[in-house]
Length: 363
Image (cartoon, rainbow, N blue to C red; front, side, top):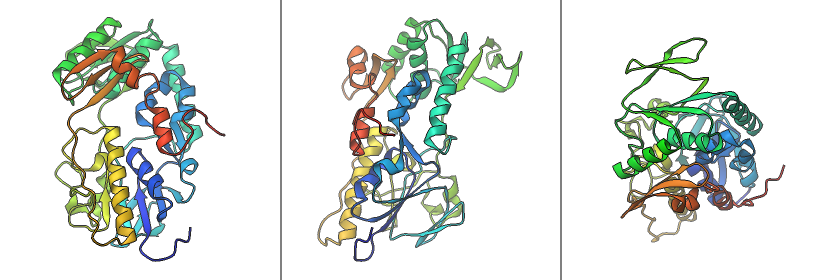
């Protein structure tokens, strides 16, 4: 990986949607190291399909080394940053000239691809063997999981409990209403403005108490509430003053951490005023990759690319054929937006962006 010249050591922390695409985009233009807690990239919006159809995960769970052929992959977590180095949990110091932080949200998942695929198989077996299922959380994850189970397992007694006054609070009311109507049509029981106490489960873990005083019976349950930002570790580093009061890294228009010339932040961890969506994280990655290439080649006089926040646009899948889509000028639900997302969940498109075959998985 000897590129000649100086100042091309890039360390990317986080191998999610943004970090993986950025790393792939600059691997032949830099001396690159990717630091990620797991050995693979997982297409997050495809994970719920893999819970009802485990073979689907074969294409959506991708070892980092499959698309990073000219980079080092360190399967660890970063625990500290200095002006010139990153310290990993194993005590390894990795030097950098440019740093990219793309740690998104925290999630407890297995370290290896094989373990993750086995986890999908176990979750599918749990769904298949249950007569009644409880989903806690009515954001996009809870709604999409409910859609997957309702379509693939229509005989299950499915209940979704959400503490908000409506579903999908990150987008508009019309989308929420259409989603509620769709779920109701699939015989999903939706309970709004209630929470579930997971510390007060009786009858061998099958009876759940809601804040409304109801007792819900379920053979299994899935918690789909929001995950915390992956920025807690930064509070003890030189970037602690770069975090806003919500724990997000404050970035400038070029996606550099404010006040830093050689540190970028991309994806959900940024304070960019837009909803957190995978396709926007991919846009962050491409803008930051272009700017890194300009800085590394020292092209004086070339202006860095500016990232401009996007208007609200979101597609939430509802099983294999339907979806609800909020677009700038309209909101639609049914098979038309479903044709855009729900059939393949953009897995082939995402694999292609990483330089991989959209359909074939090589062992």
